[in-house]
Length: 443
Image (cartoon, rainbow, N blue to C red; front, side, top):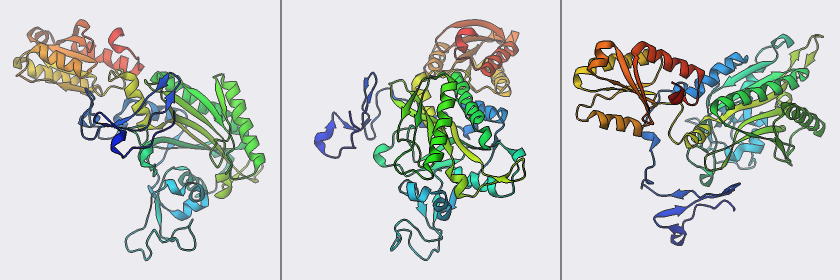
């Protein structure tokens, strides 16, 4: 089934909804529907909360940043706006300009739309929002002389990227015009290349195993509009193929679908509806080091050219979050959950102790809330916590207050009994740190 464009005529509308896109999947097909301002049944509006001050509070990103540091990556931050001269030098302006947002600073003497005799060029003072980080990382590599002792140099960047996606291609969290990517680039010597590719594949497998995802790999080879020498392309494709064969996971050949600057390994996940999503990627690039004249002094003191690896584990953080949300069905594992524990006092007399229990949870780094609504019965509070999918409920009454304990229930209404407050908090921390997928069952 082909992708369907957004319909505009009345006959394309079905009972209050507008039929949008709907490709087939291996187990059937699906359709997206546009409902205007109406809600869809029991759909949960994620914008109602919980809201996070920054994405570093998301458990998956904490896992990822720790893993990056352990594997020798340095986290860097690069600007959001660059002159279009940079994108011309990198080759993106020639191959990617239709997907970029261009603008001019205030006071510029020519409108951005004025292309005249040079349809592929913009005025020299034109800026563009970055759709990727690789040219900026090349500038960082080139800003001072480099030695072979510094290689491999691994730079990780979690900044926001902007891409002018067609309106018909946008979809929830899975395709956005502004998104965050766990983007990283590895500058290495040619003889380090295969070891670095193996490390990238191992990184993918270890993170996806924790998230509970199976994945499928595809080797995408030289497209029709490629840059550079075909011999370099052949060499790069052979390196990736050998790494895939050694990795031992099944993979497909995706002929002609590589990036314009090099071949790549794409990582595909399937959501709860069976829809495929391209998330992680490993891309080999011999072109940007040439275009930016990147060099390092080798062991023989001669100048050599590094090889560049583009790689991401999650890809778009928002896309992976969307896939995770559908896979979990709202029941997040403890270590990823924004609703880990709610403390429920039986009566207002226990509210002070309940607040103390909540503070103990927060001090241990656990996401906790207090339900001190005196207008609800205990059973109503418990039911409300279950519907909100809090992983655990700490119920405290007069007995628990006197003994400094908590009575623990799970979101599936399993009653785990009475625990000392300090022991219960410690056990939750252990389960969170171990990233177990079923903390409610093994508590």
